[in-house]
Image 1 (spheres, one colour):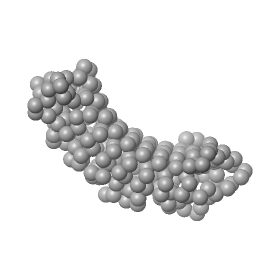
Image 2 (cartoon, helix red, strand yellow):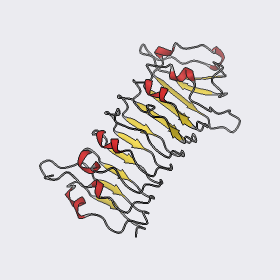
Image 3 (spheres, helix red, strand yellow):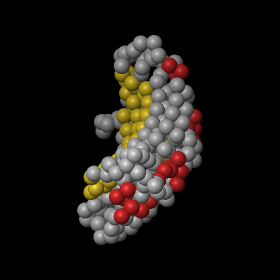
Image 4 (cartoon, helix red, strand yellow):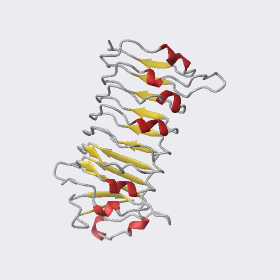
Length: 249
């Protein structure tokens, strides 16, 4: 169910919170008039969006959100959160994290230290750098499109379960060395509209065979003005069927 409340605590500066709360024992729907507080350990999904112009917006991730240690899904959209704090990484049960159109510029070092995280979406912010993703051993989807990233962290190669990488419309000048060899389950890569001159980092492992192929089937590298050619080594991806490379050098 959903609950809409007004200022449950002093450290929440949003006028309207839309909370999706599912409990381990059944489902609960809370009306706004009830204004009932739900025990933090029980909440496993929280959706806080600010869409209407009259709504106030969060300026930080609220302390009451950071206290939801059993949280499995967190969605923040349309706020003014400049920094994702290291304390966010304490939410070790989070599987899905979406922080979109929130004006995020900085992500502190341990903010993404979430071993259960499978889907990370940080689109339409102003993020200049990502912290280490070494702890994200379960990560399958990473979407950091529409930011200000000049590079992806080298630790990305440790996310060996990654299937989808979306990093379009950034300032990427390079890709993590050896990512194609390390991320053999990667199916889709979209780095459209960046500043890449070379994508050889996406080459498959040496010795890749038809019997043990990589998973990559779609590669999008259009609108990289410095990219003159695709490396021949990409042909080693046996399942690669779709390559989009228009408006390149």
